Image (cartoon, rainbow, N blue to C red; front, top):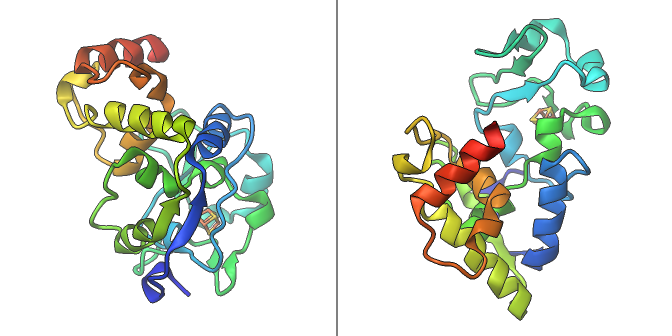
Length: 207
Ligand code: SF4
């Protein structure tokens, strides 16, 4: 089944614990735990999956012929491409064929980030768009409401080139949503957030 086959709503859980887990995953201190069911939207949406040189278990299971050098990265960084249907070469009839050893990028990807941040997924990924529409975070506690407000206040400035040190807005919605997650603390109690504040923090973190 793909996301496009099913329109029923899905519980995304509470947003505050979700954010904690997502932050840990982005720091490399864990992974997301997405109740995907049979959905393979993110594995079949024309995504390039970056694999870093230290990901030995994943690399040992990915055939050389489906790896390509990652543009702009040192030797050893590779990406997996996708077929004419947009499917990852490691996707089989029953899901990921290397699930236990899947790349780090797959372990931290969580399409609930679009719901939490309010960033719209890219239109060229309709299966992800459909799946994102199904998620519902559980009724908000005061903590959850604060988390959502913080995430969305930061995400709201991420379409503005002035927010980025190089002046270039990341082309993919998933990048902007991940940035909003990483910078959400800027939004706590101080909305609206100025693009300049986001820019300063992005510069500090990249330094
Ligand atoms: S490696 Fe596995 S989890 Fe990652 S995109 Fe491919 S099929 Fe999906």
